[in-house]
Structures are given as structure tokens and as C-alpha cells.
Image (cartoon, rainbow, N blue to C red; front, side, top):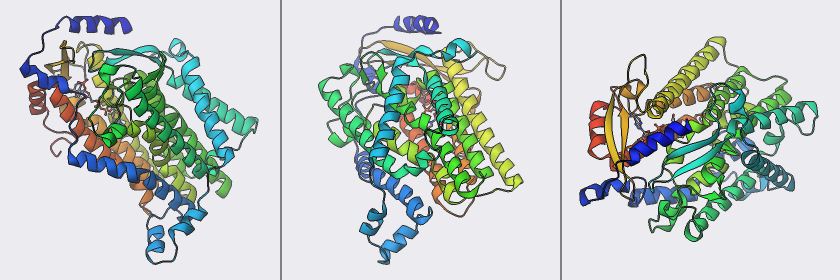
Length: 475
Ligand code: NDP
């Protein structure tokens, strides 16, 4: 596959041209965004309030049985003061610091020092050294794809140590959840700040840095595109996948173990959440090589948004359903459970097939079959900063002919299924679908803005051919 990509890139590079004025706008893709007041306001809001939002949700479960309104009512009526809530909040402990340090160090070891073995034994799995997409500066990075292996080793060790050797309780994560939150925040801020300093002082690739001149924007959205330490420690791949996403399934398992401990049984809703989110996580690692071609890796720079987001936001807020079910052990009727399972599986199917169609299309340069037919597409071109002209294709058939981001639609259906598993007694578990709807709609718009800057009039031809974003005929 790597050889095929080399050949494709070599063919694409043949079209080197001299940059002229009319083409300059196209070179802006992926960089030099102007910071408008709305972006700046959103960034300041998130920098100030995102850590508080995470704290508020987790504290609401710890002190108010996951009610989001009760803490506010208590504060507004003077029943409680902020200091009362704060004093009841567990602080950072040496035990949590030890667990967290060991956890992150272990993930670094798995990432850096154990080359992938899975691709040698698992048919169809793409692992080992793989190439990412071309960066705006024209660089193609290599990555060691070994996330599935890290996930498997971590989970085998988890089950062995929690249930066979009894080195720790399977509820260890739940039992230290708030002290671990402080550790995750320390790492999230440390890595984002380090990335900012590194961007100024010793960037991995200076041509792929983005300086907008606005400190807050640069801190949040990142300066360096692909910061690395040494040849292989890639910040984006590591922090995006591990420790956050490897932890996701362990966190859910810990919640299930807590239900078992508290109520003597694990509810079907907890099993559903574990299964559906487990599929999503496994899908991520099975397709980690594909992930190199997604927006997170291909287009986003590494700043607080990814650094803190991966350390804190993802593990704490993506797992709210399981946490909620520890406090409210919902047992669903069979019809509801089956309905939610079907919704989750259809959502996953759409998500996976849509992503697969684009991956296959791009990998084979359109020489493939989508739904049994040769794919239809629009030819387009773009340029990197050095003036090299590249050619690409935008597919207009398969799910990509239904809507421009039908993969997001599938993702949203799956997200809704996790939330519905928690019943309707509280809003807290629905945070995920609300958040994902905002995230993916905003992402759609952000991506389209970028694609327009990249492809110019070719992108307009594409949007004319596929007029809807998420829901055919509606949006
Ligand atoms: P996409 O995989 O949709 O990638 C968008 C890019 O694909 C565009 O920038 C463009 O890149 C290329 N592209 C767009 N249209 C076409 C087309 N018609 N044919 C071929 N290529 C096209 O977006 P993401 O990377 O955001 O998402 C990947 C998956 O990850 C999604 O399924 C999403 O739901 C999921 N996701 C999940 C999140 C979570 O928190 N759970 C967060 C974000 C995403 P190019 O420049 O190469 O042309």
C-alpha cells in the first residue's frame, strides 16, 4: 500500500507549476486563518469555561445524582455556597497521581517501543509504518500504527489484573474519578503549553506552523501542524488515540463493575452502552491508518483543542452515559433495548461504510467499485505553499452522493442510541448528542470553508452536484 501511495504522490508531483496571483488564494488552505471576532469569542469562552463544564458534570453526578439543575438551584436559593460544593469535591491524591502517571507512561511505552504485530496476523488489518496525507508544506509524515495492539494488550492486562491476580479492583477508575480529573487536567494543560512553546522555539517543521498573531487563538488551535519528539513520537496520533480512546472502554468497564458492586447486577442499558461504544472504539483502532486521513490529523494543528480535549474532554464527557447509569441503573424493556441496539448498529453501519467508501476511493484513485458501480467524481486541483500543484477527486456517488457528510449523520445516529439507553429521567446523558450535533455541524462548516479555500471553483462544482450536508433534502 505504501508503494502504491508513493507512486500516486510521484504522479501528482509531476504537475509542479509556478505560483501566480490568481492561484494564491488556493494556497491558504489549512493555514493563515483570519481570526474573526466570533472565533475569538468562542475560543475565549471555551478556554474559560470548558474545564468548568467538565467539572460541573462530574460534580453533579458525585454530589447530586447527575442532576444538572439541583446544584444551580441550591446555589441560587442560597441553600449552598460554591465553597460547600468545592469542599465536598475530592482533591488530587497521591494514589490518583500514581495511577495516572503509570497509565500514561504505559501507553507511551506501548506506542513507542512495541512495533505493530497485529498486521502480521490479522487479515485485512492495516498497521505498522503508514504514511499520512500531504501537509500544506508538502510533507508526508510516516506513522507507526500500533493502536489496536496497544488496546488489546491494555485490555488483556486489565482483565488479568482486575479479575485474576486481583492487583486492583475493576472499579478503580470510578473510585478515583475526580482525583484523576485533576491529573488529566495537569497533563492536558502541560502538553498544550509545551506544544505552544515548541511551536515558537523548536518546531518539527517550521513551514507547517501557523501563527495568526492572536495568542489565544494560537494556544487553542495550535501552532505546529504535526509536532513530534524524535522521529516517531507524534503528539496528534498519541494524544488523540491513547491515552483517551484506549481509556474509553476501560472507563465503561469500570462503571459496569461499579453497578455490579452496588446493585449485584449489570443493567441491559449499561451493557448496551458498553457494546455500542466498544464497537466505536474498536472501529477507531482497526481503522487507525484511515484515521491518518481524517480532519484531526490532516488539517487541525495541535493546540489546547486537541491536547486538553483528548486528555480531559473526551474521557470525561464521552463516557457520561456509563457514569449516569452507575447512579441510575436503568433496566430497559426488551423492545426498547432492541430498538436502541438497532439504531446504534445502523448508525455505525452508515458511519463505517461512508468512511470506507471515501477511503477506498482515495486509496485506489477512483479505480474501485462503489455499490457495484464505478464511482462518479469531480476532478479538482490545489496547491501547496511551495507552488506544487496537486490533483485530487471528490466522489459524488455512494453515500457521498447522498450528502456531503453522511458519515457524520451515521455518527450522530450512534450517539443518539447511547443517550437513549439512559432513559428520559435526566438531561445529563443527552449532553453527548447535543455536543456531537454542535461539533459535527460546526465541523462540516469549518471543513467546507477549508475545502473551498483549497479547491476553489472545483469545490463549488462539487456542492452543486451534492447540495446537502447531513440530511438529504433537508440540510
Ligand atoms: P471526513 O472523513 O468527512 O473528511 C473530510 C475530508 O474528506 C475533506 O476535508 C476532504 O479532504 C475530503 N472529502 C470531502 N468530501 C469528499 C468527497 N466527496 N470525496 C472524497 N473526499 C472528500 O471528516 P472527519 O475527518 O471530520 O471525520 C472522520 C470521521 O470521524 C467521521 O465519521 C466523523 O463522524 C468522525 N468524528 C468523530 C468525532 C468524535 O468526537 N466522536 C470527532 C470528529 C469526527 P481533502 O482535503 O483530502 O479533499
